[in-house]
Image 1 (cartoon, rainbow, N blue to C red):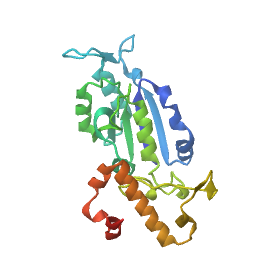
Image 2: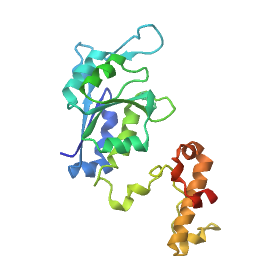
Image 3: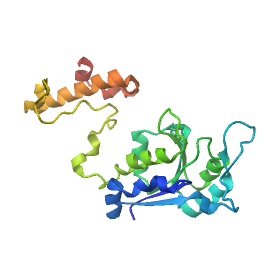
Image 4: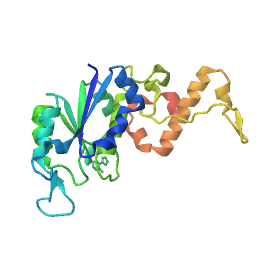
Length: 241
Ligand SMILES: Oc1ccccc1-c1ccno1
């Protein structure tokens, strides 16, 4: 059966890439299956209305609850996590992706910027976990791009989806730190040389150098990640680096 992903959206064509490349191969091997559903299928009026003006006034439109409830009742297997991308959500991180990759599947509800009537997420909690998540501190027009990002982050962690050549355990963020710089041939390029240690064949020295570079880059670019590390995450060698 593999990992099951369903996405409900008013822009189904936007999510066409989900059938390509990485997901395509994995889907072909039965590791992942994806269903994209047009929310308007569950509207009840001739104009197929999905949104309305916000109670309390304010700009923009809010997505009506009834079409969403019908769509989720039709699409969401009982107990499956419902993911609602929203700028007001908890942060989506590699740790969250890893958690979700161990579950049987996910249902994504793509809302517009002004959001979906809150009663939908509140109601949906009775049929399984609901996660309102943000992929970063910026504003999008809708949740579709966020779904593409999260599907890619989660599916690459499903065993068998990514060849072991691109082994996932050494990714940036896998150990809470950023990866250091990478190099390939030629050894000297436009008067810039690859750090000699990488050509030394001394694997212990290479591992030390890479760890030091990872710590240096993390301290420089993401001090928040360094501060968030558990106390025992940094060795004595790390601290002296
Ligand atoms: O900005 C958004 C609008 C709709 C749905 C999601 C988002 C968002 C922004 C950042 N993460 O998610």
